[in-house]
Image (cartoon, rainbow, N blue to C red; front, side, top):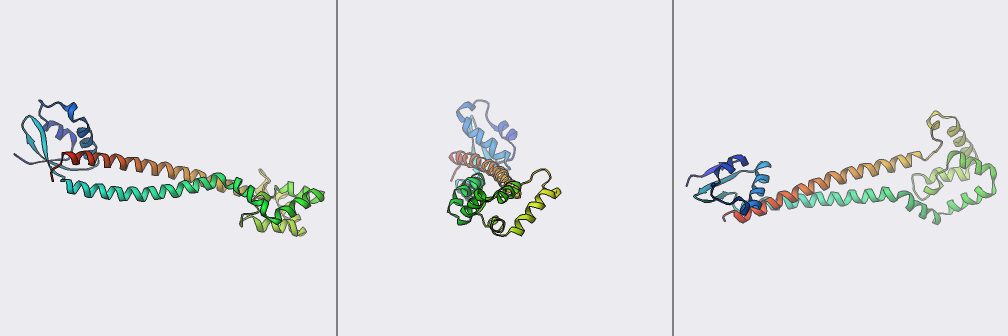
Amino acid sequence: MARQIISRYNDFSKKLPKSIDRSKFSERIDAIKHYLSKGGILSVAPVQSSFPKLLYPSKLRIKSQVTELQELRAQYHQRLVSWKKKFQQAKVYFTVHGVKKLKEPLYWKHMAKYWSDSDYRKDSDSVKLPVNLVSDPRWKPMVKMFVNDLDYRKQLTQTVDESVVYAKDKKVAKYAEVLQNFRSEQSSRKIGELEKKLAEIDVDIAALQEISKWAGN
């Protein structure tokens, strides 16, 4: 029997005896198509009136390839879990801090001044003070200064009212919304990319496992 090296499915298909019922080997043929399309190489020996004998890859080689793919899959899965966590954090960011604010004394100090001091209330509404984010270290210093320092409050109010930066949206914490939207979109994109990679690896592994049934030791 002449050993033949094959790297394209069309070449392999020509080696199949016309007498065999291809439908009986449909899963194997699909696996071979996929394996070769991904750069795999087969070494076969023709068998008269029967499916060719697979000489390479061996079961041992296939097992090694499957192990490599499973390790790669584990790495991608770990990344997927991480990005899903980031996506969820971005989605619930405002809800979480909306609850956490209730434990912040600074929030209640703001609310007391908001309802008792009309000038303070006017300034707070003017800049759309991000008091709901008072539990976030990024925004707490701003809220603290606004609540406790009259000069800072007036300066910030004037800046928001006059600066071209806030011309279209007079909201000092607009960046918080932009940031969470960016994180959400970035996470969603990464999740899609990783899920696609995982699906491709699953198909690769399934193809190798099917070919393994055909392989010799």
